[in-house]
Length: 173
Image (tube, rainbow, N blue to C red; front, side, top):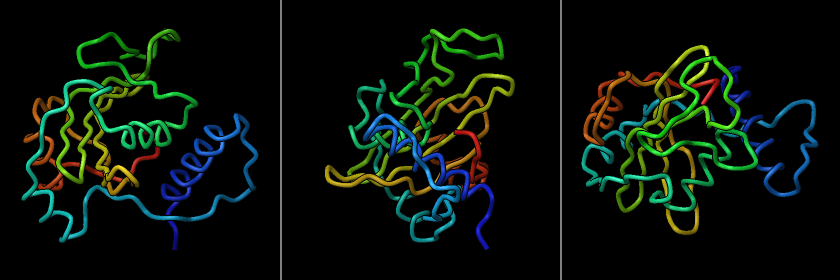
């Protein structure tokens, strides 16, 4: 059985892809199921991430293009809206439309994976992790979810993922 979270994520990614290609959203009434995104449940992926050597990425523009495109699709907007680390963003439900609702906290990339830890403002201020498998040709979301606040390094993000402290999947990225 397909979970409602998986359907909502699939719908959001499909809508973002359609908006990115033609500027209009003409979606069928039921979104096709593609893949359930969980925190990081595969033993093989856990072992792989544990052994990875991640290089710190200090800005959104420092992320590979495929990962930036993946985040844009995940967030469901026509452009990638995420503030740089330390920059102002909509941390509360006080509407400031000129500011993004998300802010990058820390990110790291290896030769084939990127971990992106960011905060999402609004009514409920939360922290999220997205795990992308990436190559120059193909990027895909492999996992992620709600994370503990206050993680300050790529190593802390990895430890949270591997320990089960990241709970996924998310309905709001």
